[in-house]
Length: 462
View 1 (cartoon, helix red, strand yellow):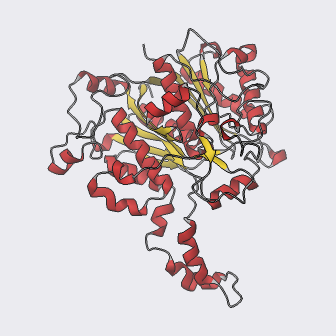
View 2: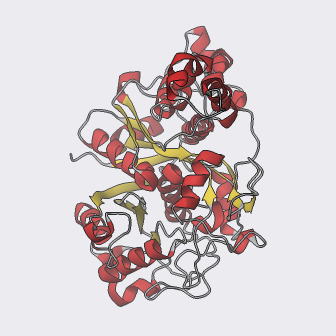
View 3: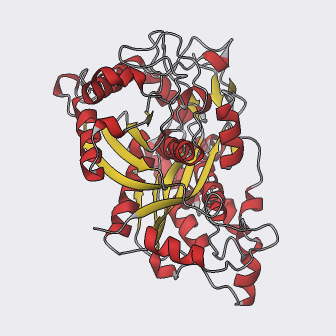
């Protein structure tokens, strides 16, 4: 477990844009992508705003030979495929998807042997397309018009498309990414709510550390912008009803006046590589990509963005609330942070910036803020703490990976994005727009509504 691991490619897909550049520029400027929902008619919902990904054509992100497969891609799958394409090109990986012409001619020399490339992607519960499901359900009504489970089994299910299940299984995100990029190494799907993307990074980290792969795609993606998934969020009481007339100020992470979160769609795929193999390929001339292909240099200006030096995952146990609420003192979050710091062999004073979950749901924000106060003491209010959800909303299974991407970009650029919507910070949390002359180490914290927690420590490469 002694191999060092770096992040060499970033592929965020959020309401701020597709790819790291647009996401970074807009986040630096303090912009928010939250706006009225257009994906469906939200008139019956209390919260009618979200951060939606800009219109795209999935055919632009897959080789021509693979376009037939896009017919069985739910939106979550499309978002993961786009994010993986962005990340692979950002890292300058040569794969069948980034250089399809060479793959077609048989001349492709992939950056890594397929057996040395893994894939671990976080996914949510993919909600079925309402129109598809309705066409089948109407065939399962009894004489009075009520749903009949027996008719559903006899005739209703037969009206679903034959490949219906392949469109909505959570593991299909990783399935399509592995096929497109010919990743034949260890693969897995993590379905642990908002922590899924960060937990997937941890899985890839361990796989590379133990030598089972040299490179991995990891992260997560999800869209809850459909009536079925959206209803669950409203019934759980997580969405704000206060920002319909002023969307850009609706989500207030770590703020005393927070009233709930708003959904975002998207996520991020990251490319992780063993430092030794990354350095070896950077020293060698890179073969040119396809016409629309990969950058001339891997990562950021031929460098990896940062090193992943610590990771830990924990589970919140709160029997009094049947695990539906966090511990008020954030004890399980504290355990995750300390575990990541121990692996990184760092003390809390080494952390220069924090990318928290901080989604704007009061009870979860208070628990996370309490955890940060326990770990960092009085210094917690002086550490720059990002406010990503105020810009892109809660991207579900993709949230943690988006936070990692922004933290990695902060370390590599030495710049801090503008923090928005935190006029009255929670105790122990700074007002956001702090400055620092040191950006060497970042802490990323993920808190899933199901109680799963993860912490990652990133370190700048000198």
